[in-house]
Amino acid sequence: MNTITEQQIIMRKESNLVLFWTFLKIGSTAFGGFMALISVVQNYLVDRKKLLSDAEILDGISLATILPGPVAVNVVAYAGYKINGVIGAAVCAIAVIIPSFLLILLLSHFYFTWGEIPAVNNIFKGFIPAVAAIIISATLTMGKKTLKGKSEFLIAIFALLFLSFVGGFYSTMGIIISSGLAGLLLFKNTTDIENIATDRAVTNGNKSLPKSLLIFILLPLAALVLPLFNAVSAITAKLFITFAGMSVLLFGGGFVFIPMIQEIVVGTYGWVTNKEFIDGIALGQITPGPILISATFIGYKMAGVLGAIAATIGIFLPPVLLMLICAHFLDKLKKSQGITAALKGIRCGVIGMIAAAAFVVLQSAEQNWISLVIFLAALLALLKFKIEVAWIIPVSGLIGFLLY
Image (cartoon, rainbow, N blue to C red; front, side, top):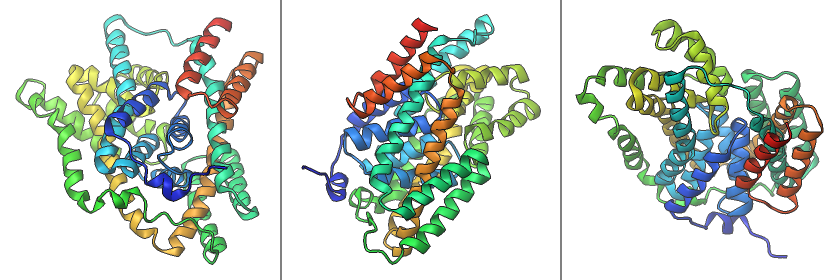
């Protein structure tokens, strides 16, 4: 049997153009929240293209969970960084945001031109069970490679049960910390710990990280230079600074962010009304990609397309930069056997958390035979026939449209 080793995986390279196209497709089909997007990323980069290992994806999720900002975009940036360094991170993060940015920009124009957009759409009833199938498929695939013993299974089951019955941001943090401690206690003296300290991030010359990060900062900020010379410069700059400031204080996932953003954009600045804010969040939920794309809606209301760009860059850029800095040092820390053991425990906990996310998505699906058929068909297509996720989501939406 022809197996691909960890070292073979990490030595593979991909052009930035191919990465851009790949993540553009991912960003166009990743409906259902950050775990759905992460599961799609796992399907493409690990199962199909063999560019990363499951361990690397799990490390990215672990790191993104304890850092501020949108988890999914941070994981995407981490994945791009592992493949092609900082430039790869920029390419992947920008590509995955573009589809939802353009879609919400269009919806925002319609909303502020003609009023409220009808929220009911049967297409999205078809998306939900398919998204659950994608998450479960990723859980099974990663679990098969990571949960190799009783201890690993126990950590994953604990994470699954604790997150399912307790929930919340502090539970997530508690799972990460307790899984890391369990890994340190259980796996430190074992000899089968995967050590991927020699991965692509090191071989791609990450010693030039400060210079690369400077380029990463300057390129998107260049889009804001011209607006500084026109009448909307003040509000454009204020949008960027406000959302950038909030982005590094937002811990715990998209829905945890909503109250803080609402307090600032509705209560403090009055940029949108409470109803407009709620509608903007709703529009963010019916688009693929991260829920924080709702910042685009607010920016568009205040300063048109330039305001939308400023708010979007502001909400996503600082957390991604922080993620890359931490990823750089994580690669160095992996040389420690204790850190490697803790990471092994955290990976098991993350698998349990992903499984819990699948159950949450399933509970929000319509409880009828149509959802069951879509779910089972999507799961079969993924596990048995290895169908691309880019086909699963649109076909499921079409089935939902036709049958509901």
